[in-house]
Image (tube, rainbow, N blue to C red; front, top):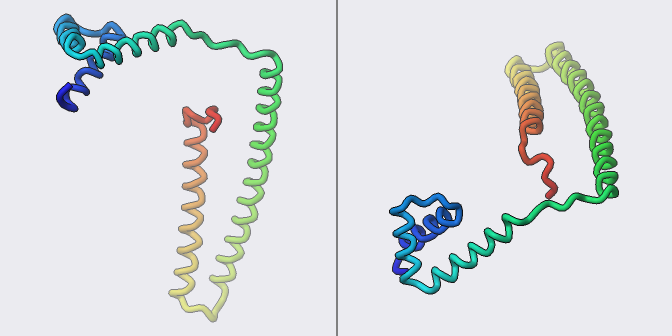
Length: 152
């Protein structure tokens, strides 16, 4: 094999051959590449054996004990999720009340310059907008994450 392009072409043709997706012209090219190189023939044979082995594999059904442990974990996850939800609602209520009192005290303080009042109010408002935005994004991605059930 003389170049990287030839190697990539061989790999593409080999994957097509393994899946039975080559046209007659592509099959001819693939066979020419194989005929000229023992190393490529060996590689193709290894991939054929791998495909045969994986096509005959089946998932083993887990024993009942595994399912029992799974359902206990689901219950624990739901229980923790509800706990976090209740905690989050409480934190939001407290933060909202604290923010309201802060804004109220800033507006009523005659000693602060108007520019400082505006700066504090904008900071609190921006923080509230960012908090809601991040929370909304996290909820959306959690609902639509295709890998949420994958254990890491």
